[in-house]
Length: 100
Image 1: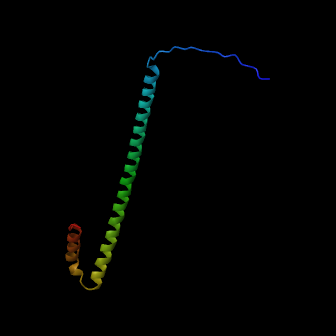
Image 2: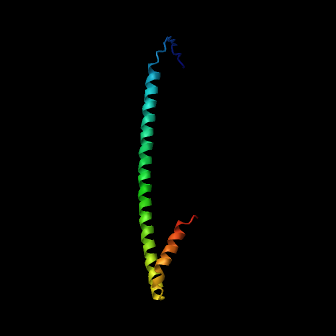
Image 3: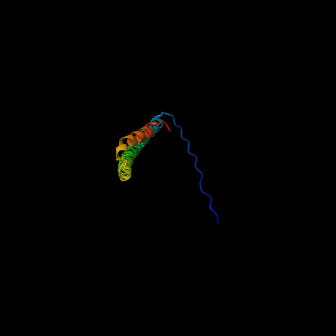
């Protein structure tokens, strides 16, 4: 047997005062500021990392260049052309300054 539940009607009247909307806007604004700060922090961290990588690469390139120059000077000396080393170095310097 199915019993019938009593029905109830509730009437409610509300007015819009905007408090919840203002609170939501403030929270969204705070979230946006936090996200921007986080983005700036990530950008700074990655830019510092890139600068460090560039520095390491520059030092490695310099060391490699010095090794190559030493090997070239030794080869020129072994060929009996040590007097030509300054001209060779000037030629290499001019090549490195030439546009690609």
